[in-house]
Length: 244
Ligand code: F6R
Image (tube, rainbow, N blue to C red; front, side, top):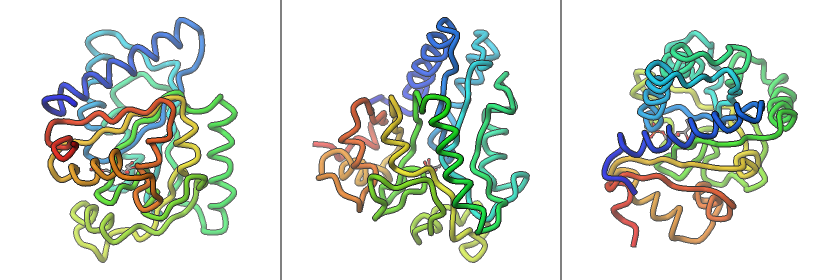
């Protein structure tokens, strides 16, 4: 638990930076699982700073994003492709071919094979070394909404009403907010060697308490992380305020 989100984000950036450097020294790729949304913005700003001011290179980084709205064009203002480019990729030296965000442009018939391939590609590079997560007000991780099973695969999902309401500001109204998304499944998240979930602010306090202190349940997918061998919740004081 950190005093505030800025110092917490810097601590996460430092861990990522150290991992990238260890992998560089071993001449290996560093496989990062990345999230979008408001929570990781400070983390990405600090990673950009580390690149620009301290020479941190991302040439050995391969990234896989958690999710994308469906349908979604990559150059749309609300796409997660665009979010990642604006917040991180355009400002560092990661190779474009090493950045992966689920494709929101496929036909419904193509999605299942595509999702299987997304997982197969992650497996082929040895799995995710470090997965970054935010948490939804309903406990979702990625877009694994309430009811998602622990062994769920990467797939097309229906977004919960509460998730769509939270996103509706970006889409200028609920009726224009996507109803579906492609998300990495819980299983691949649980297979990551290290998981860091970040949450800031009072509005996350209740779901953080449920995720950490209540029993593991599919109602709150973030609670599955209680069973992960190397997961840490990084919180500011407000998000931690309901923990006993
Ligand atoms: C985004 C994602 C979501 C968000 C969550 C929290 O890629 O996977 O699970 O992390 O909805 O969003 P913010 O950070 O905006 O509160």
